[in-house]
Amino acid sequence: MKNKGLSLNTIPPLFIPLRFFLTAPLFGILSALLILYHGPEIWTSRWQSGSLALTHLITIGFMLMVMIGALFQFIPVMTGRLVPGCVRLVPLIHPLLIVGALSLCSAFLVPIPVLYWLAFISLGFGLLLFALSLMRLLVSVFDNQLIVFLLRILFAVLLITIGLGLFMLLAYGIPELGISFRHYTDIHALWGMVGWVVLLIMAISSQVIPMFYVTPEFSVRYLKVLSFVIMVTIALISLLKLMTVSGSIVQVREVINIIFSCELTFFALYTLYLINHRKRKIPDVTINSFRLALISLLAAIAFWWLFKGGEQRFGFILAIILLYGLALSAIVGMLQKIVPFIIYLHLQKLSLKHPGTISLIPSMKKIITTQISQKQFVLHLLSYLLLLASVFYTQLIWFAGTFMLLNFIWLGFSLVQSVHLFKRKQTQIQTYPELEIPSF
Image 1 (cartoon, rainbow, N blue to C red):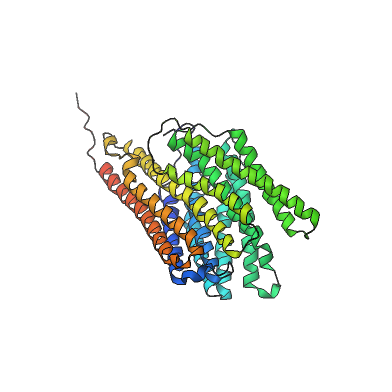
Image 2: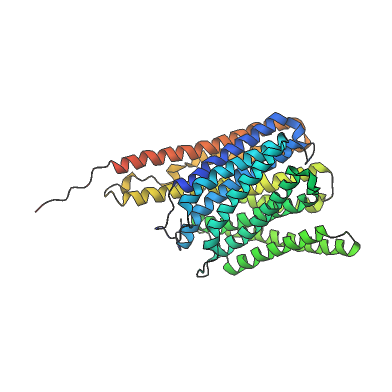
């Protein structure tokens, strides 16, 4: 593992990122149970209540939860500065996100206006606190920090995605306003399922892959230019979607779609190239999660060009590839690296206060073992393939839901057992006899 540029003295309290990481698998379990409850009906329409609830359980309950926890952890380590007010704000942000995600998904399933308002207030206030905590740091001056630049772009895209989502929540909560929320759904999905997901993977990959897999460093200039260009391209596509369709508009859309596809393809191929040229090719099953994510991105691009404008089930296939194949694969792989990493750092920091305890600190591969990671990858891959197949062969949905449930249960188990290991080692270090200083 490379630790170049890391500020290991600036580590947030362990409870800050872990509370988000431990909560995320619970939303994954709920999404699997929702699939098992609805069965084949889940793929009947993108506007079906179960489909809407499923999408937001994954995007807000799982993905956003993990991303916020990762940012609170990685920003201090990468920049040497704690996120301002994180200790005070996280105990507020975390429950607000939980209430917001649960109330929103419940509102889709049981359309009661008060649930939409509860979701609007909880998510709006929780994300506002999160935005305010990051804002002060992201506007600060840094010495050419790549991760800070990527976070600024990612932050802007996230604000637009959430803003569109909250705007559409008003349409649900106040039907009298006459807001045609379906008109904005594709734009919301573009910013969230493509823009935010891809830029999130880009930010994660630029730090996690070189650090843990000893690959060549990502080109700073390349990632800065590409992330900015992707955001601008998405903005152009969104504006064109709002315009009246004409022959010239259709042609411009096609040209921009080609450019956008080239941008995403280049990112995927470039990252796969770095992975394949890592300096220490020690077998590590978690790197397969990143490979699967990048291959899924390439598959999504090819699939969109082959079947765009096709029947509805192709839209479900594209959503599964982007959310489960691209985003969740990378996040699951990241969690199995970042959680052992932060546990190791906290135990190392604690051992400095108790001389002679360095031998009590387990290696990262003992915190989440290779065997656990191997089973995780198999469960994730099987559930991913079964979800894709279930769109065409609907009876497979029961197998897909079952393996998806096992996937998230196993992820939760691996994270919980690593926390138990931390507590056990923490107690051993704190109760270790102090070295006696001989008197002369």
